[in-house]
Length: 163
Image (cartoon, rainbow, N blue to C red; front, side, top):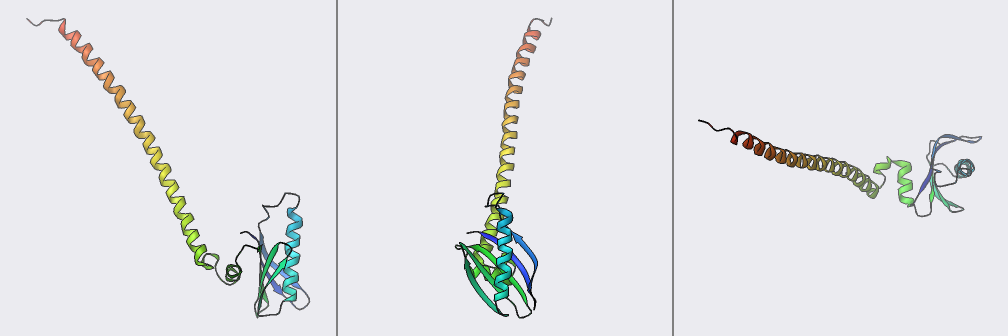
């Protein structure tokens, strides 16, 4: 399940204008990335150009699914994802805040945050454990040294008799 592109376009009378776009082409090889990005831009513009105002549609292009939503004020959004990406989530993403787009996405985001907090807590506990281990070993050394000091002091004091 992968989201490759999210684009915002304006459907003007002569042509469609790309206002803003975000791409995730990290799964493609370095030399393919610019071509894939151009393909996504071109496909987004073409789909918006062929869509009517106030419409939503999903178009399959090669192995990608392109979800388009054109509002009545000519503002359009296009999501390009793989075929596993749920269309319900894609259309909600075009209309809402991504964290509110899908209850499962929201739960997943909360789980991710909890996992990060738990990971940080475990790291701090391990650091404390290491510090405690250091203190235990230092106290054992101090115990041995104090016994040695006690024995030495006893020997020193035993050689002298009080009269």
